[in-house]
Image (tube, rainbow, N blue to C red; front, side, top):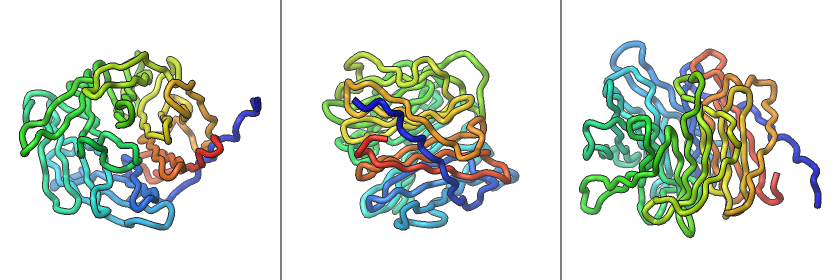
Length: 320
């Protein structure tokens, strides 16, 4: 058995439009190719807005501004994106309301806004993400547009659209302060961050990562895994990798990447070469799997003149 350690995943810079204001990243697959999305929030004076820009990483896909989200308050909204039918983008956005945040979905093709949290007007929802399907970056089946989020900074949930435009159906996931949910067979997987002691960084509380299988109603369906042990992380993302899973997270001094090749297999933490950048400045990690190629991106020095995206890719066959 070959125990030679793999070479480090090498991060390389990618040019960002509106770089001095860049505050968040996401990766989506359009026509099978990875596209990096970056947001910049203009909050110095009303009218406040958040612009989302696209940067194709493989020469295919949209480039330039793809969405502008008006907002009442100058907060930096958390958001997620997914590819919808016809190559358009759909967005789910955190709408700041002072003490309480709501979630809305924006259809990129029609511009229609749909409230996802009107059924609980006195709860605060944060950290929205589309539930990812087996085809990374696309809206999942059987509940298109299902969204995970955190309620009152304490409990993870999945919000599923009700038939005929009724109130969202809310599925509890348990204790979480950040969560990514992935559809799959025989059931979904939840990647959850649980709160841990320590100071926040860039508004993100420290926590530990736990991974659990879920049944069709998103209830627990097996023991939890701890891909990074009890190491504290700030932000995370995850995606399906064939039958396995890739997780990326920021920590105090490292960008952490874990790969599990199949359900029940052990997680392997992969080395990362930051390319001279300081991982203590990293935020907004994201990961996307397309055609068995993994793309990872992270933002360095957000909302400064030196802000830049760093990107790494590698094939899953053979594993890194």
